[in-house]
Image 1 (cartoon, rainbow, N blue to C red):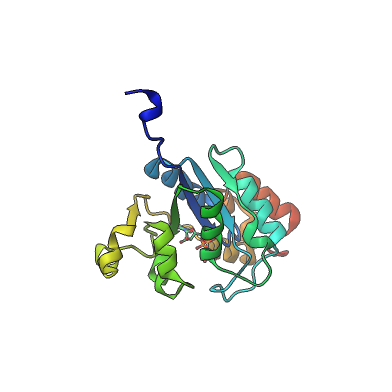
Image 2: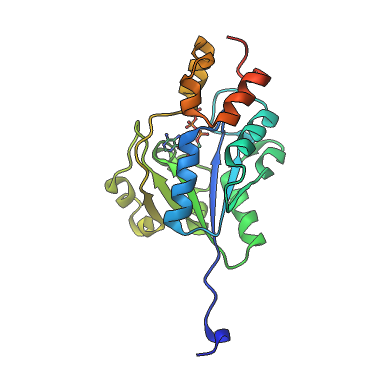
Length: 211
Ligand code: ATP
């Protein structure tokens, strides 16, 4: 068989969205696991703009983007993608997936999320279209696990879901913000939860106010 007869492997693009307010070590670990387990060619890390499903006021896009860049800096295959921050009004994952698919015809998209997000997935805007475009890859969280029964509930679509194997990590952005608000963020606690460069950025820019 000549080389030209071997079909090229379909490009695999992961999409990992989040508020990243702030990004933390579980985000980093989840990105690594996704790249390895899904054999991704590229992972798009997409900080949300005005996410429709987060009730809380987020830190500025500029801060979240800077911290996300610091978190994933130098990590092979990762591209921090600003498109949702540049979009006016609410941001929807389906818009990002459709744009990525048209920029990368023939690529297979993988949407990466934690189990807490998956629990509410049926409330996402045009979720059926999302499942049509991307394979949904779910990682368990210490606070929220994903069960096979939850996946089975999707019936005919269940083959579009798969589980990532991530050791449970208790860290959440909410906990980090709470630590900072209580003043504990000045201690070493925060350094164990976020990359060092992010801890420095938070402190230098007082992203979460002065305790
Ligand atoms: P918050 O506490 O403010 O809700 P978060 O820690 O969940 O924030 P997000 O930026 O909302 O962080 O998360 C982005 C994605 O990463 C989501 O899909 C979320 O489920 C996932 N994720 C965050 N933390 C973990 C974790 N510890 N284990 C597995 N997945 C996680």
